[in-house]
Amino acid sequence: MKVNDAIVGALLVALAIAILAHIQGYPLIPGQKYGPALFPGLIAVGFIATGVLLVVRGLRSGAPPVRFAPWLASRALVTNFLAVVAVLVFYIVAADRLGFVLTGFVLLLGLFVKFGVQAGRATLIAAIATLAIHAAFYKLLRVPLPWGLLERFAW
Image 1 (cartoon, one colour):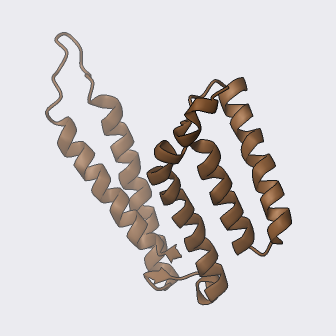
Image 2 (tube, rainbow, N blue to C red):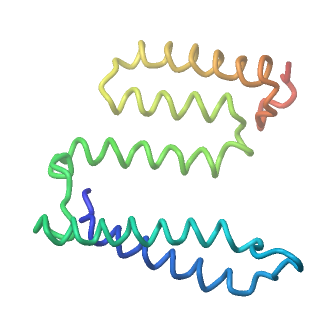
Image 3 (cartoon, helix red, strand yellow):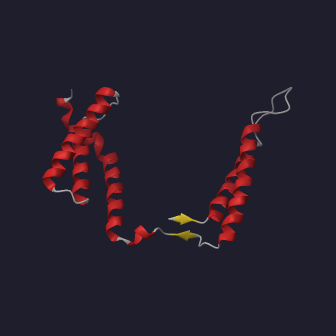
């Protein structure tokens, strides 16, 4: 999806105005000509300049406000995208209960099968990849991954 530069520029100007309104309440530092509002104010002015340039460029281009990418016309590509989003949501919901190893294996296996990998090969790769990722994060990087149902088998 491509959003016209005029819309992005207008949002940038709106953000800059919100920043400028917010920093008005920053206190002054006694004995100094500038205070904590200086740098956010300078950044906001830069946002305004950039936003105005984007608005002008977007209006001159004559492009539609929003243009969808060609891949959105392909049902297979859209379902692949939705499958990736669905497995991410499933991981968030299920990882604590099932554990990283089981959840990761199920998610990888599901994606591999969805993307056309043969079931036997997908199962083997999903198992090896899940164990390798778990070992890398849990043992090497010391990231506390959830064990879930496999807690009694924790390394």
